[in-house]
Length: 103
Image (cartoon, rainbow, N blue to C red; front, side, top):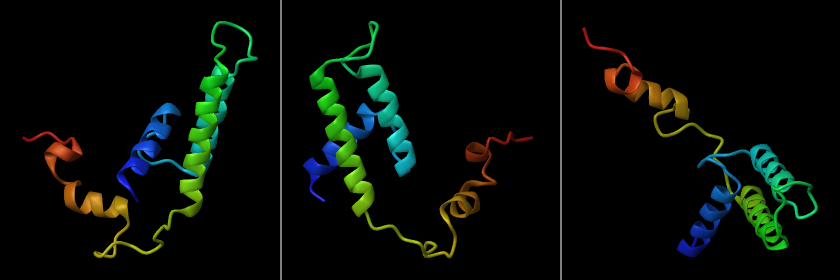
């Protein structure tokens, strides 16, 4: 994927307040929350502009398109572990990463 496309995806996820990993459901929930806060027809001071809604809509479409077309691996990594097991194997007993105090 081209660098400018990654930059657009990063801007879109930040606009919706998403972390670097999000499910389709989390994307949808973040979008709905942002719409409630920024819709131009919503009452109160929090109402947004049509331009802001257009930006939210395009960000949502971009992230959902990426989620729909991204190829995911359903196999464990090269060590045969899933991400959580790999992390624990490499850092789980480390006092710095695991949060344990030295005696």
